[in-house]
Length: 527
Image (tube, rainbow, N blue to C red; front, side, top):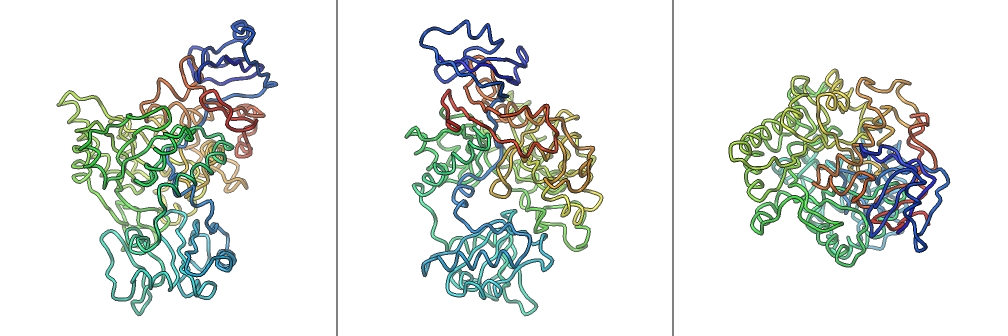
């Protein structure tokens, strides 16, 4: 047994909301309570750790990230720059160190941050003419390639736009180097794909970075190769993040065929939901809207799946007990998902089946008439608070008055919706304290746009935000009896903080860094 004492623990356990000591045995919490009571359980073999008044929280979970992309991306060019020129400079530096024939990969550019807007293949050619360059945007819904890469992929003026995708073209009809949505796949199939071993090695290297931020769990939305990598890590005892793995839509029939269901798995790896895409994203204006974008009267975005199609996929998934997690950003996409989910709930009731824990990923903007539909149908809102502070200007620019109900945390929570929070890394930093800060203040680290924050009516309390990084993600995964609280019988996944976030200026929340992190009763960071 080990005992952590001289602490202020926020347990999220109703029976004992705060505690000054925790006893741990066999990787799980044995007792939580007053220091004198817990220390009385010790014997001569007990490992006692004085944490000197530190604050202890349950380990935090990122409820939506791309673990493979994030882990591999730690080696990519960081294109999240304030100027186009700086991005090109970084590409040139990396290209100069890249052997002939190898790809220059980068991620994070956002044309909305650059006065020039989108870059072009011709610009990249000036800095890397002899190597293929491929840079994914911050949203992961568009990409930027140089002419070398376009030639390798066979993308030319005669290449038609694929279904659900757009090849941006100049006035003469030639590709500019910018690809949207499924058009990205035309080029990506040319890039050597990492093996499961490559991905496993990258994830193993990334784990300490994620632990250092306070993360002990993730819900991953990458595909088959990532799942294979995670399985190999889990089998080797090297996976030390509680990972919920989504099923890509293209693998749904196979999953149903072998009888997989949500919740199946091990202590560190279990099956989540099947991932669907209903629309695109705000940044490239491909999110599906009920009305056109504010400054583009001919554009209402791209709808990939309507309610009927989502229902069809949901009925197939339900045969095996697999829940749905559907990407929906625009108000039209969210409405289509909600209509389909309502019909799935009716089927569950009519056929006397248990209610699956369906989710909507992002829920970025809703029509006011639809705000209560998530709670009414028991739908989980999987949201990313850090998108709020990154996208506030773009939301106002492209959605106008509709952005009042963008990232509507408080309105949704007050209606009874269960919120789970994540980052969509590598779209944003997976640092959960950046997300906590964004949800509580709706301000950037600089204090922009004001003391009250952007649409301050949607700020939520720190306590509620913490629940959305702990217990609520555990519920979404069917893990609520083992994760997300500091309570007897729960996994001993916890973080030790040098100061108490509940007693600090909310504007400083993003600066918090754990001193120590424990997973399954073992210190994985800070020793």
